[in-house]
Image 1 (cartoon, rainbow, N blue to C red):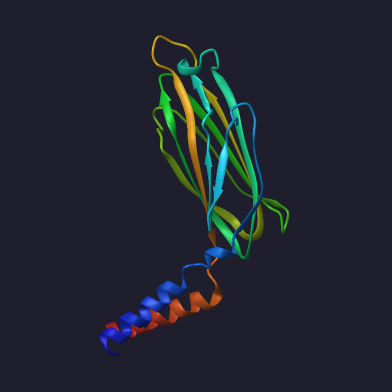
Image 2 (spheres, one colour; image 1 turned 90 degrees about the horizontal axis):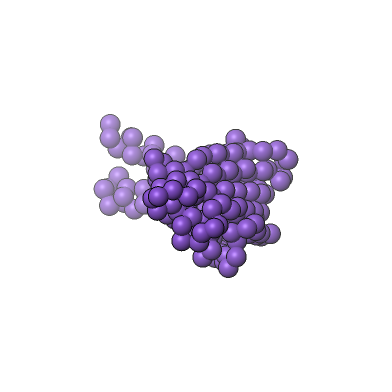
Length: 193
């Protein structure tokens, strides 16, 4: 096979393996608790972004030294969703700490398919990013996230703040896309011999 034809075939195969992002639908979005004032969100093809102008505790807003923030939403995809990635931007200083918990429920076949807990402090640092693989794919999930922010008073500058949370969801690749990639890989291996 000529090099340019092989490259074109490989490019088509790899491009086809990118999941159809328009298939994810977000709904029933709820942001609540003591630090949710003014919160907004934007929905993309595979992600949902949350903005928090008032999720701040510590010296700048003394005497508010602790507070909660809760996010929940549902998402569906006919292909299935098998992982998510979270990014948290904000600020920490002094005694500032953020306790974070996420639970992902499968609403199609009831049960918890993923959970994550972390203490984000100065050692862990911000921005904080992680990818969470689900126990099994689901066509309908519910994500619940809770943040507890604390910044005890000391002689230092003590701050805990969450300003932005981005949640990306990953769809299961379509079977035809995976098959096309397998064919391209086979042709590449054959060509290498």
